[in-house]
Length: 153
Image (cartoon, rainbow, N blue to C red; front, side):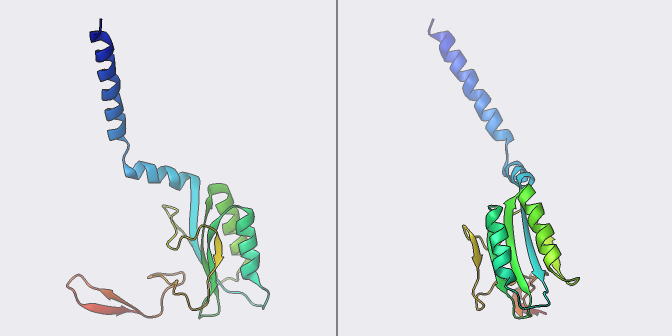
């Protein structure tokens, strides 16, 4: 009689191993990418209104997190991550605020680089730039495949 419960236990454990082996990290991140939106932006504005506070307030109302900062170019830059629907609203909001020179890059995996637990206004001296637009660093040094260093301009 004890053989049947042991056989049943072995079958259940075998099923758990099969199911856990079929779920890889890519599937988990893909699922998150379906539920969340992450994007980076750089917008040009033509007046002195405090748009950083306006964007921060809207992000907090949508339960988003990320950061925003005045850039050395005189633009406003930042990253935002939210649930999908709120993220689309934030993209539309940020796009509507900026001029025709605004630049938004939506991330495929929804993960933002700088990751505060709330929506933070970064101080002007904090280095937040990236290798590519929007908000590309003016002067960055990178190591080439052969070990040499070169400057990205």
